[in-house]
Image (tube, rainbow, N blue to C red):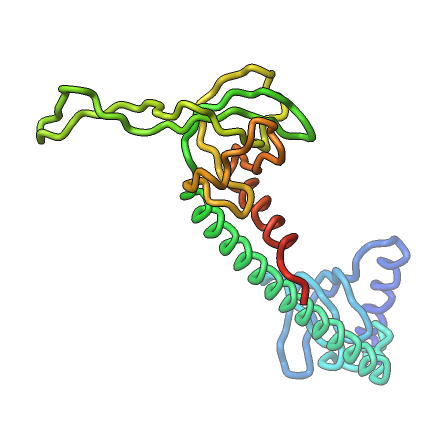
Length: 242
């Protein structure tokens, strides 16, 4: 070993003893690449990372002169093992990233499908005047009157058609159970869009008109997404077993 390298090693050893990073005035690889003002930030059995006057770099220990390799305790056999482990780790990380990506895409696809289903379900909503009568089991038992367009006698618009206002023709109220009104006091009257939460069509009166005994009023919801889930559960519950 020549005198210059001996001085360098002694200097590096002194810096290590003082718990400071390894530094080199110049560092030249076997391929002729030279770095100046080198300060080592990290190294392992296969590579060394450092900052230099031109930025930052990562160099394989196998590309450095033998004296520098000895300084870092380079062992080609350990390097091969470490490189293999690192390759395996990187491959596993890439596979996990791909799985996460596929899972995210599947989740987004499912969310989009559910959003479309909810929007389609909300088109079945009907505007009602409801009055809360009983609060039970996380829902409200309500009387309901459908709000519709009613012609105004002897009043016409500019096209000559009868003018209309919102009103109620229905005389006998329907009884429905509405989810999402748990904190509404008994007797409260409100106007809202109500969405079917079961397998029944709200436009077929006989499906949701119930006897005066109020036996098994059909489920509705104040929110479209809640109603959609109620309907899915009802469909799953009544589906024939295979």
